[in-house]
Length: 121
Image (cartoon, rainbow, N blue to C red; front, side):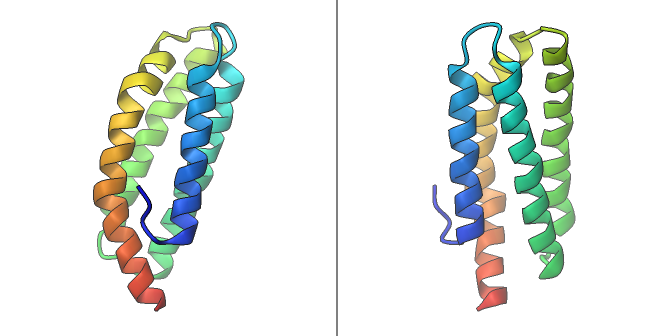
């Protein structure tokens, strides 16, 4: 899904590339690619949060809360990976993240991108 807002579209493409790399990591090697994915998500969400704040996006707090919720899950998974536990990370990557990401792009991010494009236009 492209939204027609360059910063967000680039972040989303990068998110997918890093997600794919993490999904492809062989057993026992997930910590580093998941860490790169997690770092990117933190930076991606921070960029979006800053843009929404700067332009006074009407659903700023709800959208930021959703980002925070995802990052909380990511932090738990990173801690487990640090202990050598990959099961939750694998399930998250395979089932939870793709569903969430698609829905988030089609709803919250679509509205946000449209708002930002109008605010900057």
